[in-house]
Image (cartoon, rainbow, N blue to C red; front, top):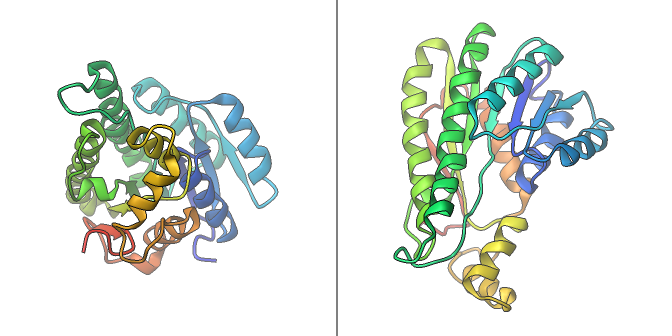
Length: 254
């Protein structure tokens, strides 16, 4: 039970990676608070996850500071403390050349993926400090380590998240707060279905095969494989690790 007596907050908690991580954290003894943008999906997820352990949730838009502040407050009301934060929420935007990329989509992707991480950090840091420290895991991407054409907003946002992690790790260290980022390759979930369709409209399976050919291990990651890395960084097994970038990409960035 690597997370016994710990309280974990997960953003993007109803998505593939977020929900699978919530399941694993619950199995490892944590009390889990999830947030995502859709209230109905939050309700359904809380009902499902409650079969595994103690869980609560609240909907919110992480790009809005008031929403994030309310989510963190609700977590503290429910569980009294906070030990682990999985800043996992993010959106992919669209697939377009940079000269044709819609400005409103660009703004939205950066607002959710970059400002959303900042909001999550700035409202959870005081609670983590009160509990004597803790661990923050930020979901970036292989797109935060390299370039990919036609997804300017997503790649830009995931590079920015790496910078946010490094600043937070340095500021958090004196407070006992560790901050690290994880960088998945394509993961077999909804987001990749959207990107596959964007890269090859009407031929998503063709795009998937092409993506898989860029991964030395020859396949997408599964949600539970990402969750296991999040668990390692959330637990005391990684007690001397902060400010680190963790590719989990089947060798894609080698």
